[in-house]
Image (cartoon, rainbow, N blue to C red):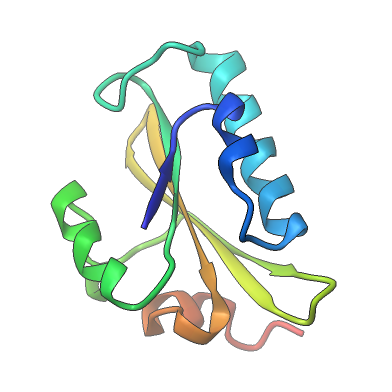
Length: 120
């Protein structure tokens, strides 16, 4: 699992599709501008989490996100030029703190898949 708080950290993401990196950059740009470039993960704002494999979903429980009980604000598909499809799931923790969870559609949990079911 990769946690990214600030847009300046995006340059460290090398093994992800460029389309996914651009979405992450866009999210973090908004967070940096709205909540500051030196916020902590206990202040208003939020951050991005990239799920690399299914075991990472268990690690989300440490930040109080259980994918089996997930009620996302929204789920977007990211279609990549390499043929992969990723998801961007926004989970609001309170009215001023959100976590964007990005993962490959192949490992997305049922709660995420249910939110995009029927879309095409």
